[in-house]
Length: 249
Image 1: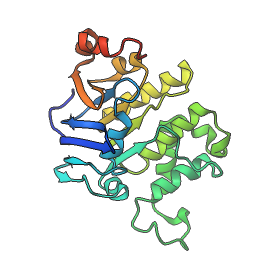
Image 2 (image 1 turned 120 degrees about the vertical axis):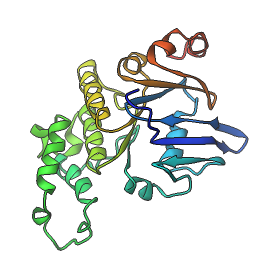
Image 3 (image 1 turned 45 degrees about the horizontal axis):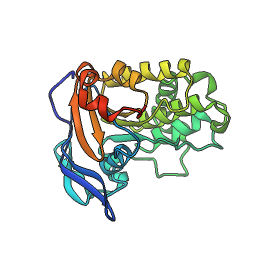
Image 4 (image 1 turned 60 degrees about the vertical axis):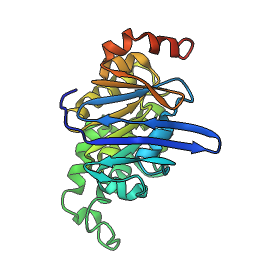
């Protein structure tokens, strides 16, 4: 962990779906660097992400981000506070160009963004910021391509670019390397590492090798509860984690 300053934390956070408790009394603290959340299928990882970002409301417990209670805020208000998220399924606009996808996200953070009669080219800094982000995620050469024509790996990169375009103070990535080949995965791992030097990253990732290579802190969920938490080396040695993952990966 690069810093002990806590940016986001939860208090006894739980979520029930009928008789099923998908997230069970989770106390999570997130500071700088990459904080990975792992666990077998059905452990509650995506449900936890949906709670943190306002897509689900807690059954009990609370969530604090930058010192503010956010548990009952809608997703757009949480986003405006500086928490950005990429989804397990990409959330791009398939029939717009790569450039337009990122530019819309950049423009969404401007006070003038709802002046639809004003040309985006006249909005200060939109073009340069859009090009800068495309460069960061390796999509400068694909700027004029329709998003739907990108390979799946590049679509995942575009999804991360859209998240970065909203000027986040924290970014949550839900399986960003899912479906990627090794080459594209390595690019995304490097991008995550670079981003984490600027802001906290919370990562859900099924590939345990990626998690152990890029993380500062790892939280292991099992049946909705925190089973273990520690550095990658501590998690690698944990007998509890090894038992939970027998056949899990």
